[in-house]
Structures are given as C-alpha cells and as structure tokens.
Amino acid sequence: KNEVEQSPQNLTAQEGEFITINCSYSVGISALHWLQQHPGGGIVSLFMLSSGKKKHGRLIATINIQEKHSSLHITASHPRDSAVYICADGGSQGNLIFGKGTKLSVKP
Amino acid sequence: DVKVTQSSRYLVKRTGEKVFLECVQDMDHENMFWYRQDPGLGLRLIYFSYDVKMKEKGDIPEGYSVSREKKERFSLILESASTNQTSMYLCASRADGVNEQYFGPGTRLTVT
Image (tube, rainbow over all chains, first blue to last red; front, side, top):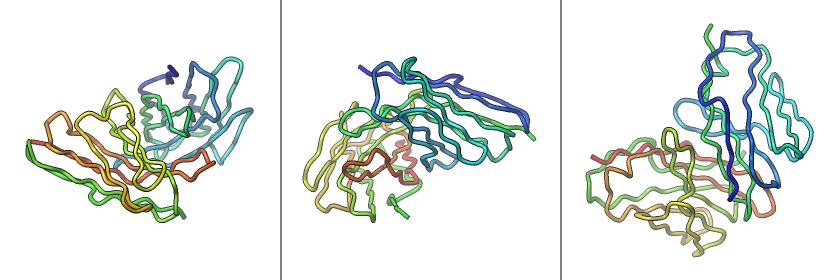
C-alpha cells in the first residue's frame, strides 16, 4: 500500500525565511502533486511533477525518483504564504493518495 | 477556468437526519470524487465516480452513499447522520487522461 509521509506537520517561520517542506512516498508514482489549502478550505494545485524541478514565482518543487522524495521550497516567505501544504501521489486510476499536510504559519 | 461548486459552505444537522451534499462541475469532467478531511488524518477518499451512474468505494465509504445521475453533478448522501461524520467535505473532479484534480470550496458539516 502506498503511503505518503510529510514533514514537518507544523512549521512557524519569520517573514523572509527560506522554507522547506518534505514529502516521501513508498511506491513508484505517476505524478507527485503539491497542493495549497488556505483557511476556509479551498484547495488549489501548485505543482504536478514526475521528475526534476519546477518553479513558479517564489515556489520551487523538486523530486528525486530514486529516493522517492519530494520537497517544496518557498523563498522569501511572506505572511500570505500561511496555509496548509499537502503532497499527494497520483496513484492508480488517477486517485490521489494524500499526505496529512504541513501547516505553515509565517509571522510578520 | 474549471469551476467546482458545492451546495453549502456550512451545514448543521441533527443526529439521524438524512443529509445531501451536492457538487457540480462545469468542465465536462468524467471523474468526480468525494473526500472528507479531518485534523491529523488529512484527506480521505469516500467515493468516486468515473462515469454517469457509475460509482466506486474509496477508503472510508461506510455510512455514506453517492448518486451520479448527470455528468456534471455528484451527490454525497448521509443516510442517517452521526456525530462522527462531523467533518470538512471536499468534492473534486478530473478529466480522463489527466492527473490534476480540481477541488470545490468544501462544506463544513456539523452533526449535533
């Protein structure tokens, strides 16, 4: 059974800090997803990657297929980055297998 | 833009009531999903549907049923609500052949 583990569960940072959230999965994947959930509930997709690295603004996602590990980095963090970040494995039948999420709080 | 809407943002029901949660997507996606999200447990799949009138159980289907009579609409039914069904419920949709799922805003259900 594929499991997706995230660390840390909770993270508090000062504005401007570089942030890393880690994700490990146990089975080979089709695609690894990073999602963001703001207070209020709505979930948006940040990245979908199966190899290498992707960048969007201050967000960078990397994946190491051999080590079954992915990281989400936030450079120059800002209070508006405060959210829950969730990684998910693409799984079979297109169903997502989710990590439990990392709650990030960025203090001004 | 893909839009997934859910019938209510907040809902309060009494134990034993029948509860309907509705989800509508406007992008002609074949696949639709219902999840519940609880602190410390993350998102868990309740049911999904890959076509009209088709449904498959997810990881935690007990106490729930679903209905998909039209392609754009996927309903989650709690036949007799219980307090342990108090949770955030999220709907999502996905096109065939594409990995990305699009989520609705969520319904926070409280059963008292």
